[in-house]
Length: 139
Image (cartoon, rainbow, N blue to C red; front, side):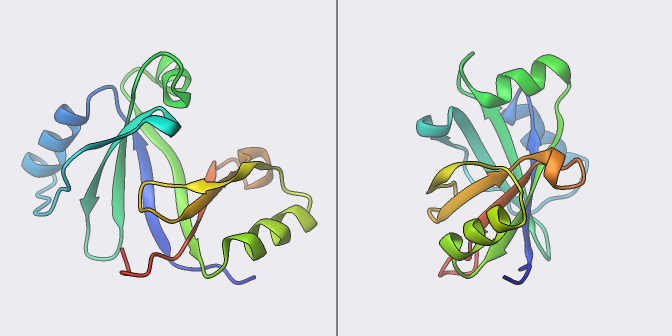
């Protein structure tokens, strides 16, 4: 397995609307994707394009959302995860498991419409890490 490009940085937020305003008005982001719900993951997301990656804004869709717990500890929000691309999600999962890393669940479809999984932060230098299969359209 070979580490692919950084696809996005996940940023948890109590309000996507407020975060969109921040990235537009303070950071000067020109391309901010329309927010959409991912009920299967319990989140609402919006992507902010940067020249070489994206910021994924993540808002909980209720108290059962995995982001709800993060925001309870970090009420203002903050960096939640890093996401790297790989060409083959099953090969990557087997590779991480062979290294003793704890993969959190089976691959599922993520916000980009491609398979993803997460690796426990204790096995990734303290950083929750998302691994995603490279999207066919490059985004």
